[in-house]
Image 1 (tube, protein in one colour):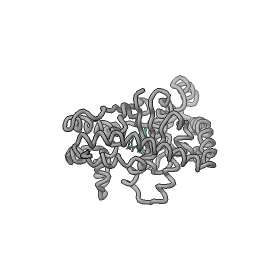
Image 2 (image 1 turned 180 degrees about the horizontal axis):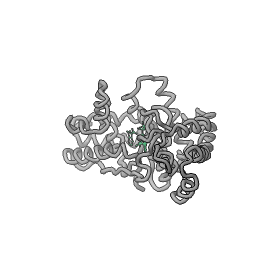
Image 3 (image 1 turned 30 degrees about the vertical axis):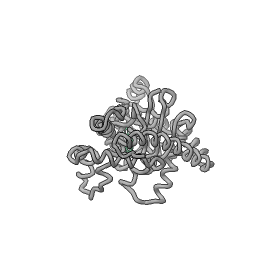
Image 4 (image 1 turned 90 degrees about the horizontal axis):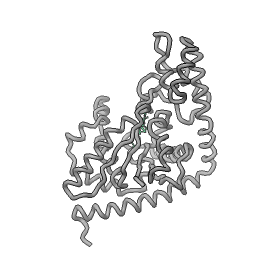
Length: 314
Ligand code: ADP
Ligand code: TRP
């Protein structure tokens, strides 16, 4: 079986953009691949240093993964910090990567454009991600469009390392679903935690209703573009064509129909998550056991790498 790997950062509640863009694929593909899905907790430190929050959000993502249907019997569910070998490998990648190359990263350019004091971790982010991917010999990496370049960086880094130290890494490929590559938020921009335009994946009915009513509608009449775009996650084109032609110009009616579809979709996920939350020791046990397995796999690879780079003497 080919190896699939992906991760989500524990930085607040996931939204339906995360789900349709990336997380749904984790579930859909877990029978076809040797799947390894992790919580990218070390990456989260580029945007937070709140230890209590990180702890809560790690457990949060673990619950999210289980609630959407990832099965720990089929899929390795672990947290990144349980595999410290990735930081060792990241250092080696740093040493064979140049600064001008990393300056091309969209994530770095975005951070720079916001004119923040950029941390070395933010700059270096793609190399830690490359280490996550390459240490597990991953073949495919399901992500949303915004992570495509990062996976290309991992691929380039694998090629470079192989050229310098000999064949070591598989070249990974991103797996992006074109129709949901960029899910729009309630303001029509890309849905993102950073833009405050999300519908949370485990939102209450009230939260869903409020968010949908807040969707920005264009004033051109007829079909409200942003409402339609979000609706297409839940209904087929044929179903939508009928609904939108029957209710042309009736924005409130269309929004109510969309809100109902989102509620129907989210309700069972929310209930499953609440159920899982009642037994947190079980969730922690899953993370612990899987973390040990992921670490053992990474250590075998790291031994090979240490040999290749010449530091294994005994
Ligand atoms: P955010 O931008 O909200 O902070 P993350 O960076 O945590 O989201 O992304 C987690 C995963 O979800 C990544 O694979 C990313 O590509 C995907 N993703 C995030 N936002 C969207 C979106 N609006 N549409 C499609 N995929 C998305
Ligand atoms: N950078 C990804 C994000 O922001 C999270 C991530 C970290 C990841 N390491 C990864 C995704 C390895 C796929 C593979 O969403």
